[in-house]
Image (cartoon, rainbow, N blue to C red; front, side, top):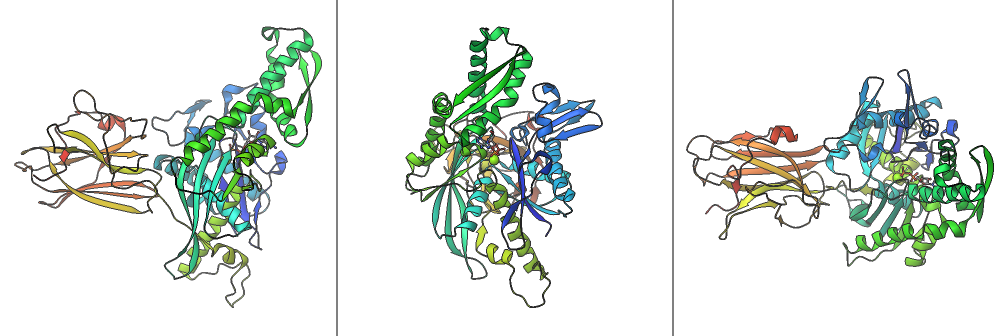
Length: 545
Ligand code: ADP
Ligand code: MG
């Protein structure tokens, strides 16, 4: 089988597939003696680009030639770029280099790779999703689909311990991000009349600047101070090489403390070899505030789904190997915490989903999907496993147009949410509006995404009544604008039908002048395209009267 699941992580990435018995297995990175590939790229010179642990080792010495945490930049508006040796790379291209390294890992072991599913955080918007897909394609992979990371983790958990109708809280503490997601698994009958387990995301929360790196930083400070004390030096007197030496060793010390009660590390302090010891209890003390922050995030995420009872808490992400995390979460959810391969679960779940899609594709095309080529149709282990699940693709945001509400004494610009977060994709919604005035020449129909479940939102408006594109509370974001030209003498009662369609590839906006049947669908996305002639006049209004 040439089908794989990829966890394209902020700090570490992982690739997995199902073996011939239908069990998920991670492809080992023998070069780094690890199951992971560090998501770090080192541009050594114009002929050599290094990805993985070897790249990571250059962070201290050659930091300006190293790119890390690129996942934070992918698909962001006005995204940054990286230039080395006269060549400029986008976050998509950097991500493609990491994906290529994963692809090479498979191929170097004599295996083929063609179809993949790549995981993304549940809170990723459509731009980040399509950029991730693009990165996969750029790496020469056929991206069957993307899947939310917590959904993938839940899938690999269920493949292990199948249970119907569960609500799972996924606690994912990685290297630089912390995500809390509530997912619901429920039995449902699919279109073929078969009972399958459906997985839905109910709520998400977290902090994209909270992760294992915060623990590394605390350890770094501790070891630096200890080095000063041992040698009677001030922090200013510590040489940059010594800092580099500490920096390159903290992650290893942290990992040791997950296994043992204490750890020792040797540091070359300005030329003097110094041994520093630290106990797990000391480490836990100095980081207890960060642990508490993750627990607060659980509370605020659960507030979004007040009537939901959590059956199981899944610990995901490499940082949950730290016993202090297991203890803190166990204290909050006694007897309900589960942890299995926390750094591999997401990739394994993606591998299961990828195989599900290939099985589905095969059954639609009537193709042979079993590993053995036997003529009688006994389902393979992969088919048996994947037949149990269905993953519904859901909208990661709410979407709708900005229109004028003319009811009441003062007209106001409102955002009408056509499609709400969590709806099944593809999602389609239409509504008829009317020009604001007689003889209106055109309509500038703005499309927004946001994180609200309300039917109507009032976006921020500037002094002239122009909508502002930011509203932090609901994360309102202007996606773009559609210009609808109106023929002369259009009246204010001419119906204009507006349609939004959202699918995995993005948002499609369309407006039809139902009097002339003229269709408008050229969507202007970039700010430079739409930042002209802002006016409250060129709008649609909600009611016909
Ligand atoms: P990502 O953030 O890319 O999703 P992971 O889930 O693999 O990455 O988590 C990476 C983080 O987990 C890093 O900060 C790493 O130091 C940490 N980590 C991995 N193994 C351990 C361990 N045994 N003990 C403590 N931290 C660990
Ligand atoms: Mg991760």
